[in-house]
Image (cartoon, rainbow, N blue to C red; front, top):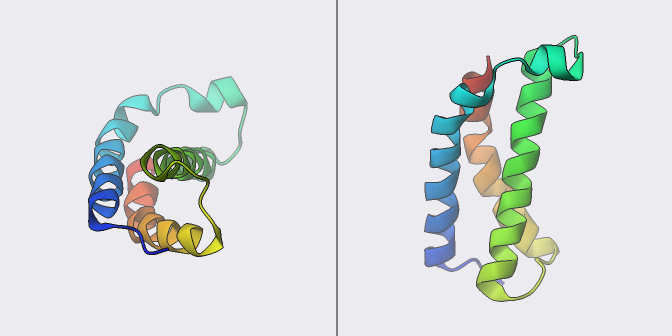
Length: 90
């Protein structure tokens, strides 16, 4: 299945919104999670949340779980924003 343009635009829009929110959420993670490399932890945390969001939105939009090819397309969208996520948590 190829992601339709409406769904693709939804993911792009919501991932961009997520980037704007990240900076506001990054306080006290180091103390709460007792992590040594806070930037790496936060990057993984936010990318994991973004991946989960995309899978949930796929299910809501198409009423089924994404298949392997669908996940490849979703991952392309996520990877396009990966550098931006990294910069927000650094």
